[in-house]
Image (cartoon, rainbow, N blue to C red; front, side, top):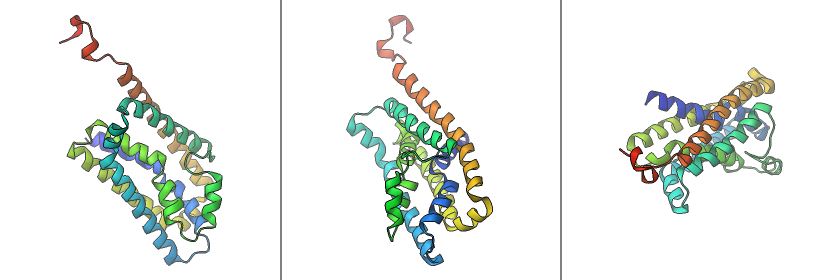
Length: 218
C-alpha cells in the first residue's frame, strides 16, 4: 500500500503540475489585489476538488454505463497522459490542457476561478483520466477509495499553496526554473503513461481462463 500511495501521488502531482500552474495563475491574475487572488485560488481549487471527487465515486460506473473496459481506458488514458508529458518535456502548449483561444478568452474574464483555473487547468482531462485510472476496477474497495481521496487532498493542498504563493515562486524560480522542473516531471509522467498503455495491452491481449486449452487451466 505505501508503494501504491507513492505511485498515486507522483502520477497525480505530475499531471496537475502545481509548480507549472504558478506562472499561469500569476499571469491571469496580474493586477488583482492580494485578497482577490486568494479568493480566486480558494474557489478554483474547491471547484476542481468537487469535480475530481465526483469522478472518484462515479468514474467506474460511468465506464460501465458506456461499455468501456478498463484495458481500453488504460490504453487511451495512457496515450493522453503521454501527449501531456511530451508538452511538459518540450515546454510547449499543444492544446492538451488549454487551447490558445481559451487562454485568450480567460485573460478577458473577470472571474477565472471556474474557467480556466478549475477547468481545465486543475481538473483537466489529464487529472480526470488519472483519477479514473487510479480507482480502476477496485472502485468498490473502501481502502482504495480512501487512498485515492487522501492523495487527491494532498495534491490539491500543494496546488492551493502554489497558487497562493505564485508571485513568490515566480520571483524565486522564474519561468526558466519552472520549465526545468516541468521537463523533469514530464519524463516521469511519460514513463508512467507508457506503463499504463503496456498494462492495458497486456490485459487486452492476455488469454482468459475461459479461452485457454484444457491443459492450461487449473
